Length: 291
Image (cartoon, rainbow, N blue to C red; front, side, top):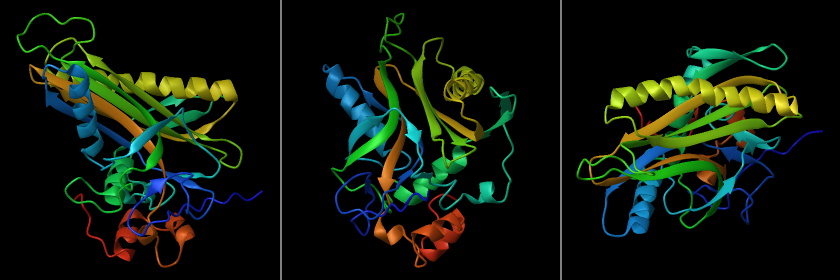
């Protein structure tokens, strides 16, 4: 059975949420994003959290002004991953990235785990940034996303942390590509948490680098539960160390979108499976945002 993976939005210069009216095709595209944001605490912690979350949305790949809905989360038989399946990042296409580590799957096969930065960068090139928007989600769109996040306060006066307070916040996103995508979905894992040990960023980064293995352990366990074998995993994290008196939010996010019409090459949607990211930029006469 052939699945229609075409995913073209109704709008020339805006991506839209999967399932929105006017789109062409039954498919969707997943973009990967991990970001964080901060704000100086006021006397209304709920409002502070809204602002910090909004800043996480607009940092890095721009997904501001959307109504974010939550998926639990898989890239299925009609889904494709931007930077891996479509407009493949050149470092992946040229096999230049090396595994960070490997884990054993339930059938004894090895799952190689790669840095997800190429996919994050590909998302920036598609959506653009807050100051250099390219094909962002249409403002006010209803957009389903694989997402998790945390919000926390760092006391201003150096007093010992209370429950829910922290020095920093962090988040992870991982996408594990199913080996047989004619019958199995690729798996998203999102994770987020608080850093409470100290205010040393190097210690936090060391924790996050080690924690990647726990994230990918969950991939192997979920694969065992449904008897799914994965071909590879991409994993990335983001964090922010708050200044005293700041609220911080971490956001891991994988939007399910249809692509802006002007993001589609002259040769049509399916040609995106044959193009690298740099070739897509050239086809669309776009200058790379990331050097």
